[in-house]
Image (spheres, rainbow, N blue to C red):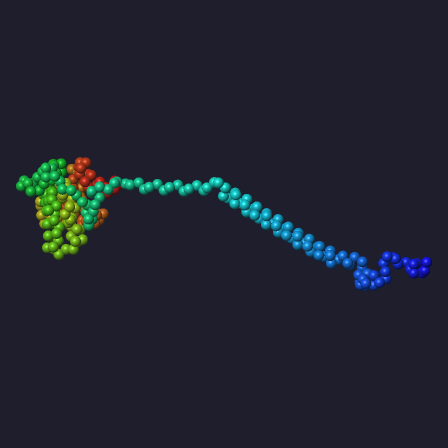
Length: 268
């Protein structure tokens, strides 16, 4: 056996094979595995991050679904709003709800219902109104007051003359004329319940606002209600008609009351 066999070097590794390995790697035998380990750690890290991201995404989706399920339960629809009840009508309109220039429409009283309240028979009222007017005039006379009827029932034809012809004579515009006289078909005198009253001792105040300074007006203000008469157009009346202290109407039975108050929704 020669000395080469006792050199102490492994016989299955030649000197040439060792020389082929770089010195740095020969001095640190584990260095050969470090690039592979780094690659494995990098891959492992990426896989770990992906798993975390996937887990977080799954948690977010699950949380959102759970929240949606709580706020809007599946298969349960939101209750529909209750329908608004229809407004209830107050006082159904009738023929007396129609107005023109502040005046209500009125039908003419039947001639068979009319009764004279003066000796010559020219001024008439409905029978119930005529009876009460005569009783009222008698009571006033007993108190020294003379109530003189100036006008009672008027037909629509009569009112046409009073409205249109007088309007033309005075050169009044329509709205101005309507303040002092109703258009035909819209006068309370058509009903047979309205009467214009004067003071027999102060004829100059007839059909004038100054009538309210007479003894007759003062007596009427204090006593007319006892005979179911009331002033139709006081100061600042809602119809916008001029103040007429001489114009009074009878409201002493059902027909007269409905004629003047039905469909106006006037509260007591």
